[in-house]
Every structure is written in structure tokens, then in C-alpha cells.
Length: 363
Image 1 (tube, one colour):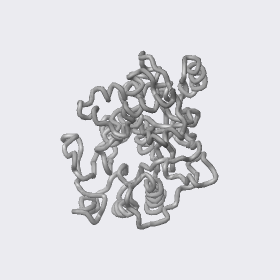
Image 2: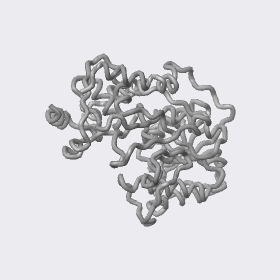
Image 3: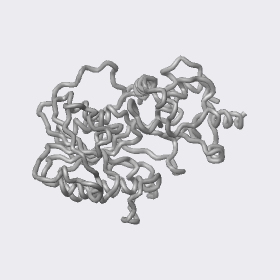
Image 4: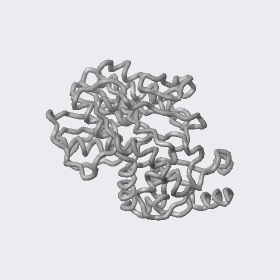
């Protein structure tokens, strides 16, 4: 269990990071970009896409999206929609991207399968000035000798190039291969952004949201094991601002979009500071979590040791990170405004019954 003395100790250790990376509430509206860009977004309707689309429009850019059309019309007449499929062999595939039309910038949010990514990269080669690929910090080779990964760190190999099914085990290697492909096909026009856990309003994974809502409920909270281990995330709005900053300035290279490395308990205490509900944290062992098959969103790197991702390059290129507390407040406001059906069916959450049983085991 953690009491107020633990809170003071953790707060002292994380205060520096909070002040360094916090951004002010009530920020001024975005200024128009110095040059209007024609932007093609591959995807655009999931978690990060709507943030990108709306921010780009606010800055005066023209936006076209390419996706399967499952949410056709969500932007009205403000956005041109191209309907197709990333798999060139399904339905009409990439046919709506064919031709000689050019864009200033392509932002690739939906590239998960190497064959798909190569096909779209080859079609768009020579028809865009900048191609920004949203990769992931999961691309790094966690079987290498290091667990600290700057952007120059080794990428995971994809042993079987025929694999296309995206699973927990294949996600990282598949994205690593996509990462390589866009740089190989498009050369020095490419920017690669590798986010850590993406947090904030609109999150479709419900990972960070679990901790926000559980802590806001108050009472005895089952935290993760190995509470001193680092966890890193990035607010979706900070990621969006960084992506637009890079494309507007023509910045190329590879960048980790990973906020400061908080200890796991530090992140939970930062969320705790946003609610007046009394909270008592309890810390299980890894063995108990495994035995009871408990879900610990954001807290599991597949049994690996402590993993951290350098963010010096992204900060030097203009990235800024708001505080965990601000992200928590805004996530809570977004979640409580969701329809009841959505709130009653979260993803990846530990059930109250599971938590109660685990707490009973801790005594």
C-alpha cells in the first residue's frame, strides 16, 4: 500500500519532469501556417487522424484523406475523401491514388503491413515533397544488448517476410520493416515519427483511460508490479503539433515521440493529483499478476527489462510534452462525455471483480 509519505517522495522525484514538460492550459488558438500545404493523410478517421485533420484545417491547410470509407462524411465538405484499401489486391485497392496528382505532404497513419506500405510508397514516389510515416517505439530490437533506445537504436528484424498478421508479437517487427521500406523507397523525402504509448482524448485503446478512470473512482487501487520501472507516453495533441511542425518546416529524419520516463507509480500519482477522491495504491508482485492473468494497461513490455526511449532529437526538432496531469484531466472529461454504451464496454480493463480478488490476496 502507498500512503501520503510515498506521495511526497514520488512527487519530489517527478516534479522536475512535470515542470520541464508541462504546457499551459488555455493555449491561444493556432496561428495560420506561413504556407498552405496540400496534405494527403493515409487513414485519418481513427485515434490520431481526427486530431491531425482538424489541426491541419485550423492552420489553413487543404486536407485529403485515403481510407476504406467506414466513416465517410465525418468531416463534411471540409475534407476531400478518397476511398480505397491499403491492400492493393483487395477491392479497388490503391486505384484512387493512381495518376499524376501531387501533394506537398503525405502523412501515413495506417501502414502496418510491409507489402501495403511498399505499394503506396511506390505509387506516391515523386508525387509528394515530404512523406511522414507514423511508426512506433515498438520497432526497436528488444533482444539486443541495450534497453535504452535513441533514434539510432537497432530495429527489430522481420524473420519471416511472408508474415502479415498483426499480433502482439508481430506488431513491432512488421512496423520496423515498414519503417525501413519507406526510407528505402522514398529516400531523403521521408520523416519517421516513432510514438510511445499515445494518450489523451479520443483514445481507442482505453489503456491510459483505465488508470484515469480507476483513480477517479477512488478507494483501494491495484497498481502495477515493479512500480519503479519507467513508462513513457505522448499526448495525441502534442504528437499532432509535432507532426505538423515537422511537415511545415520540411524536417526529415527519425524521431522518438516519447515523453519523460516516469516511474510507473509516478504516473499514477500524477493522475492521483487531479482528483479529490481518497486513493490507496497497492502493489502486486509480477507472479500474482501472471497467476491471475490481470490486465495492466501500458505496464507490460512482454516480460522485458526496463525499456526507455530517448527524446532528445524530438525536443531539439521542436517537440514539447504537456504534463501527465493535464492529459489525465482532459481524458477524464472526454471519457465522461462518451455514450453510456461506450463507457460500459471499455477495452483492456481489469474488472472490479478481478481487482477485488487480487486485493484480497494482498491482504
